[in-house]
Length: 407
Image (cartoon, rainbow, N blue to C red; front, side):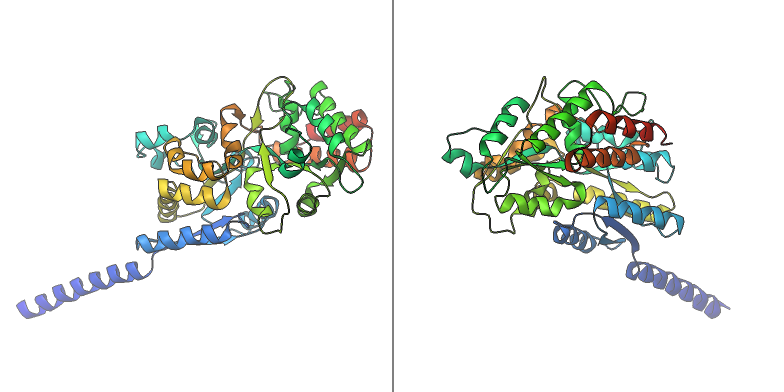
């Protein structure tokens, strides 16, 4: 009997050891969908380094297209019950996901977060992840819109980048010649929001209702249309973003508004001029909508997958990894303490720091679920105004009616 019992105990211990070994060989897989096409290699390197640093989780980072494309894929995946564990949610799309109840509440993880680390985040990006009192989002990539310009051309003409939108209009006209326009006017809601904010308005009211026919929205749209009609701007739709980059690098236009994270999109081209970047022009006050995305965990994920997603996010938030991320993708560092580690890099080219220098004036984009659809309506209206020459007031009145019908 003693021999048999010993055999059973030994077999049990062996079985337990085999289970542990099997668990180590089969770490919990965390599928991560992201939209960082320009920094895909960097994201893949982060996943590889994280996977090598421990044996409990395996992050599978997958680039799934632009923010718009990934959003459509996520909606389809949620319906098919095969959504990823971790998802990079563009901040305009984030409120809708939270409102739809498809995101995991991360409160149980947040309560164990080191207090010093939490205080180190810039409030704007950290607080954005809270929706109706619950933590659904985590900071990852943050940016502000900046005005890119042909610094070589401005210097040759003894000109300076504009501080106000009035100066901007004058400069756009001055830079326009037979071979190039002063500016690329893109029908993009994010860029347009800044033009409205600096006039003291907003595209969405505090109660969440669209405000597309307000005085400030009408003025901003008319300003862009006037530049286009007088021949100082090339109008482009949001879907023509790649063409807009080519317009700029081929000097068919000399100024363009974009995220600071678009800088790496320009670098692969043979640019014959010095690239400059400056804060967004103002009307009455300096204010910009911050952009980027939050990392979210889908509600249907398992507890182990959620733990893996949280562990990977903590890995991404290490100081050395934020430095790597900023240098690779040009996004604004989301932790205050990281800034000194980037001083030398910023000194190499002060233009790189412009987006960060606007961050104190950055405000969230509209935090309403409906805006995910409303901003598409706004962009369609802007495209008709810029490319089709549509009547500004009538076009925006129609857009307002459509936006108010969005549930």
